[in-house]
Length: 199
Length: 158
Image 1: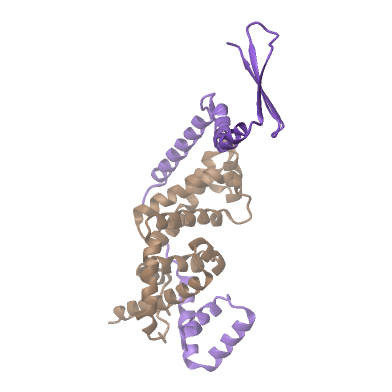
Image 2: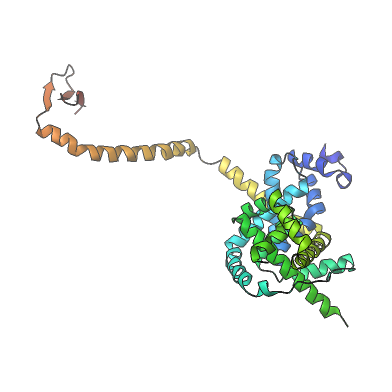
């Protein structure tokens, strides 16, 4: 049956069903389709290319091992990114980056971050989409791991505060605080990047 | 405006506040210029993030990237098969895992019971009697404790 499948034109659902029956070629097609997204998510969390590649590949290995458990309650890409996120969080915990930098973050929150003036104008107004992505990427890279992780999980992954708190192992209040300070710092960084661009 | 209020404005924009709290923040933003300015800034950042999630493409070719995944999957399956084909002693080992703690508990209980048994023996409540064995090559001893209501027969096959 797998020999007759036109993999490139098959839907994700079809490929998943084939993969659940052990068709590795179908799985390889899924990898080709979604690998950039998984890599981008891993990179957004660990900010290191080699680590992100390794974590994205580990995500696919885990996905193959658990593919029979995928019931289709969420989309396949969503299911995959959840696996990637969990692997990245474990990775950050093993490196103790999450904990160490969250302490740094707490120190920031009591000092400089509170004094930042409100950015009145919209620093990203009228930017081309590619330029906007580039600036946001540059600004996010300057956030602490704890702030960045909360931001990625909430803003990009669409998780509610409760889910972010569960995954990061902290209280909802802490997530509220981290998101607030992450956004404030981003606004300042984006405004700074805009000023740098002025003639 | 204190820190908690500022944080609430951020959570209000995310729709994460209870109705009563959300109404209070909404009123504050409508009436307080500082709260409104902060809400505007936070809103701009949220909108920028929603529109500009950074993208990133892998530099590795499709075949090269897949080859590492394929090898890792094969290695994992080989490990699984090796575990499934584990030696026939595996069931025995499983029983041992269950019986070892039970045995340890029994030994501890026995050690704890020894002083009590000795006390009974000193009090003369344990009666010892050798009974005649019907078999020529076997002998037996019987221990009987009135207080414990227990009889133990020890068969010795020499």
